[in-house]
Length: 127
Figure 1 (spheres, rainbow, N blue to C red):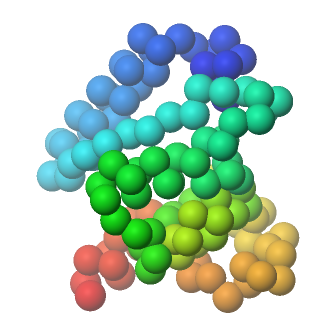
Figure 2: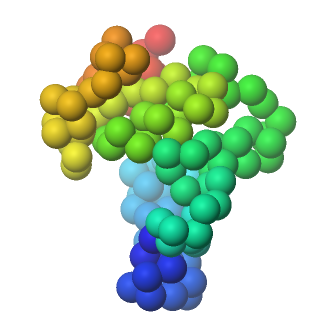
């Protein structure tokens, strides 16, 4: 919601994304696509979590189903968006993750939980 709240503009956001891509590239990774919800909490869009719009946009772009695709997040809204999109919600304990873990609703208590994104990636890449 930083765009909608005027905390930064699109130019600054592009700069953040360039830096993120560079940092990931320096470690041998690649970010193929970034999607953003530019709306504020009261705009009623379908792309603001916990609604699944951004994930569904990615699925359409790549022409894939999200069934069985892990969607990693640290907040309940992340997990709800993943489930609503048909993806498999995965929680990391970093950021808000530990707090989220202690307050998971019954329907999400059986999801996979990892200490951080690196732990999730290590397990996923070893399969």
